[in-house]
Length: 544
Image (cartoon, rainbow, N blue to C red; front, side):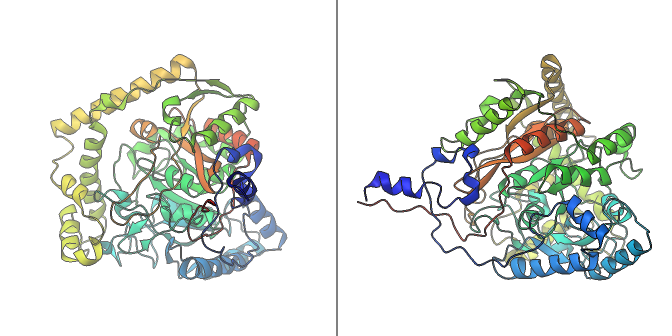
């Protein structure tokens, strides 16, 4: 067999269903896994949606107790054993009893809300007033029990959700040191990508994205400062949505930067992500930034619970961000083609304001706010807590360097600790530069009457590198992050079986519009593929 026939025969052989015609797989050289596909037991809940769960619960075909039991067995078989994704850091010891109580309430007709009896995973930087710790993955906070639920957890419980457990993350939300490895924490170890186990899951909401992709739950919560929801969602082939800063309260969430932080949903479909966001949004006196959200609660909730595809959107194409790699670019070209084919008006190209205008102001703003935010959070832990300020974390890491600093250091923590207060002239100037940059983005949106701007979320996952740290082809989340705007990512195809996502971002409070655009794209492409937990990605040797 000659070389050409060899590759023709193998074309798309290893990609299975993910090599549907629309993905542009034929533009890529053929590949084949170097290891045998592991045996994964059939799972009755695989790819089940929230609507399907609720239909089955309402009919009695499923119970919350049974759902919880099945998901916990799946986690035990796939997260703790088997592929060992290490995406779930801690199981809620009360999950089974809560599920049983939900079933009894359902029998009596006492429905709490739209998530009644549905298991949900949450990132381990969200406070829960129960028997689970809240640690941001750090051993420094191991055993730290919150005195009150975070606002988003209060909302989940009120809606009837079962907090199934807490997911692993990049420690301190990936804002600790240089050469960090996404998905690694001192407490949880390394989260792995469910498509190829030696690939990065990205971060910092690594565990939430990997767990949802692996069907450990239908829904999960992550948090994002800059890319921490959308990037792992892209790497793990799921939907991720970071809302407008101020739409969802940050009270009870271990922070990075108040100007950019938000919690948000991760799910396998746009509709499920929107439904989860509808549950957690709204004003909270503990987070003054949410006061502005009050006027949007009613309209957003209604729109998010019943999204309508918006195929004819006017979209700006950030063309410079699409030039990632010769093997990656065709996938995004196919995505743009799908949008055009289904009626979207693409303004291509557009020129986004250069980030060089910021002069690093966004990073400086984050450092100042990280110190202030962490110290404020530590003050909520009570007088008995051993960690009371950022310097205590640094000292803890130094004392436990063999466990905490074994792979990379804590340069970012040191930089933040050296900053002054939020009244410092340097912080005020950095914040002003970021606001001016946001004004430039707003002017661009207004001038062209864009419904959203589109860009690649990130390239495909790179291999885990415990020496050099994260490697990747770039991303597009910084623009919306600096502005505090919403952004959603949707699977748009794959490169050698590695998912890539397409992002849509727009003005503050535009979540319903973004969801409707993303839903139309999802329906047009159907690019989500179930992971197969392959050990590694390999290439066939050419015959000589």
